[in-house]
Amino acid sequence: MNVAIVNGGHELREGNVRLAGYKHMAVLALAFALGQDHPVRVGVMPDNRDLAIIAQIVESLGGTVTRGAGAWIVDGSGIVSGDIPESLSRALRGSLYLIPPILAKCGHVEFAGSGGCQLFAGEEGWTRPFDHIFDLLPCFGARLERSGGVTRITANRLHGAEIDILRYSDDPKVLMGSRVLSATKLAILIAQHVTSGTTVIRNPVCLSTTTKELLDLLVRAGYQVVTSSDEIRIGPRPPGGASGPNVIELIPDVSEAMTYVAMACVTRTPVSIMGLTEVLGERLIADELELLRAMGLRLSWTGAGLRVEAPDALCSVDVECRCNGGVLTDHQPLFALMLLGAQGPCRIVDHVWRSRWRYASELRRLGASFDIDERALTVFPGRPSTANQVVEGADVRAAAVLLLASLGVPGRTVVGGIHHLERGYCGLVERLSSLGADIQIRREEI
Image (cartoon, rainbow, N blue to C red; front, top):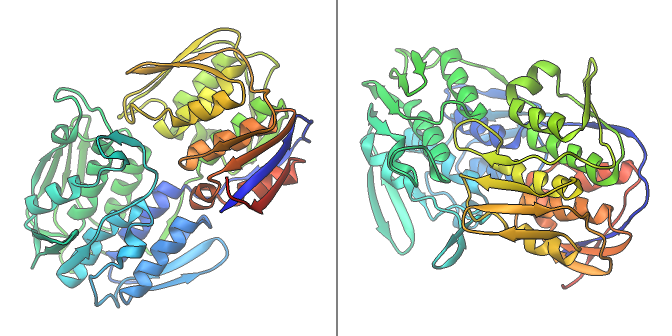
């Protein structure tokens, strides 16, 4: 297994980093494109392992993916098989979003489960729930049979349905937990293939950027879509089939952007993040930007991006990650790392993944101080400074946080789990190295 050997504690140089397209939206855009009757060009495509696996799945079923520099052309018209290879489907979370278009093309799907970052602490250890897809599909007319760990899904055609997303919430009265956003996105992707009746999604996660982007794709394809704060109504597939779009341009990866903001805080090195305009930034991560300003970071917009400069000491703030709007759960580990440089204790609450604190125990090895209770993480002042430690990232964002923390630790740190970075980032190690970070990738057992 590869590890990163980080020699930290020295000053980096100011520079520019360019954002890739948003990985989470890329997965959904590919699923949407597969459901079209014509090739679709997806621009600003990130180059990471998870998306490469999705391309393998598509090609294994008879579709085509032409991968160019920064853009893919996806054509699902040749899909003839619905048997998703287990070794591929279990390699990433996004495989479950391919079920609706494949089911519509073939009339059947065989699905052995999905993988991805294991962020849920259950009785059987760390997992990532996906059973809500099996609850949603029958509402639209699909039939399910389970045997030997494989679920066979069949449908002659899909009809409209009424779905209440609160059904998938950890709290029956408010949107909470890890399934509500995924259920909202899956319901929209299934609605793309409904041939009769209207789909009504009640209490959706409507403020999510990915929800808004998906609905925009449906509108561009000719679907009738009506949205409000508590309901989404989607008409059936337009007569004669969807008319477009032929081109999808991905929004910039805001989680990459926040990662480089965290780097600027840890190393006290200014950085310019290219590809995130002020209009996009205020639309996609307004809550994060508000917190960063409250922490004392100096943010300045240029014509091509965002320049970030961090003071030596940050102001204390509390962070709340909500399911419908607010700071993204993907960003709470990054805020935890940054707030180690604050002047006083800070409290982080995550209503999406309420046990997403595994990175904290690893940061403790580097000298960080946290208190964890059932609901929150309390961050105490004190930047990581304990060298000659071995730490392990258990997921994409945890691996990134540990790598960044190591940059600020004077001396040598070994970071394991960096294969997660290849799943979720485009050349993060290379970009950090271009700014002067001393990171070597080696094959070692830890």
